[in-house]
Length: 393
Ligand SMILES: [Zn+2]
Image 1 (cartoon, protein in one colour):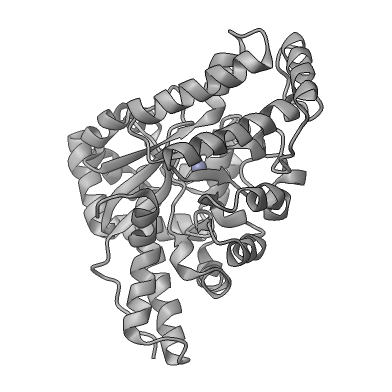
Image 2 (cartoon, protein in one colour):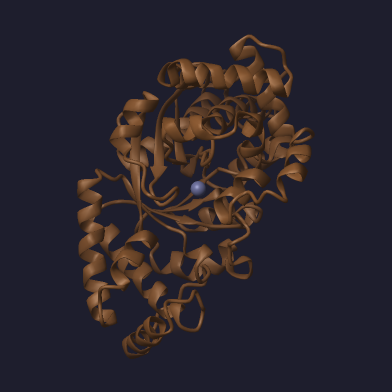
């Protein structure tokens, strides 16, 4: 009864992903490919690296991780090998080494991925989007992350007003030279999402003390500066007509978990309700809270990564919650691929299937027609992201 909504030919634009280089992919140990695809593995890598003492445990946990198992099975089908971890890792390494670009093209074709919106703040040094586009044979839409810009500038200035002016100028220049479609902030990993408006003299004093202390990430010293620079970012974004992506929700262990919820960001979202802001990860695991905010503020958007596909067995439930609470035309599929391109591939594949089930059930329950279901599904997979970022599909 749920097969009515078909999204087989719907293109996918991944609204949140990260850059990679073929040489880096080939340089990693093939046997731990699936470890790097799990939430645990990817988060350990992006925080302080996968430590040698954690490796055996992570490796063992991967064997019973639903997303890793799905990857193992589906990659074995794609590569024509036995569905064992060893066979899949070896066949994948062989395909990547033989012709990496052709292998990646197979992944994109298999999952119907037409483009990727790439946050350039991780990994560092920045992956060149033109190079990535050529190596991976895929359309890349860059997003400029503000935190690396702040690090570049703060050492070279002697006051907050100098920092603020240099920051605005460099942000605008980066948007142009990198041909960026959006701006990103990970303030949830620095001082928290409870961004406040500060009196100028307090910000100036905080900057002087922060610089003198060697830029520790303390809420007392760094927060007034980072909050004010994010406010400035929103002004720049509004002037140049770009959406702002804000990491919202949990993430790797370096997140400021006490101030990472959508409710913490709400005052800022409410102050800036006249410009588009995307909640990256939709507030995971406080997804309902993020979707609720998107349901009461007109220009708050939800990006689905972590819910798709790291949530694996509860993906349908997460998509039901997002689509039932937030206006569906403000929901954008994303993978948060940051370690291996297969994460983008498996996320697109499984999200397409989950949407067909969830929207098919909605048709059966008479919430919408089949045509509505297809329209909503195509919107989530690509069209909502394309419309918001002005991308050609
Ligand atoms: Zn990310």
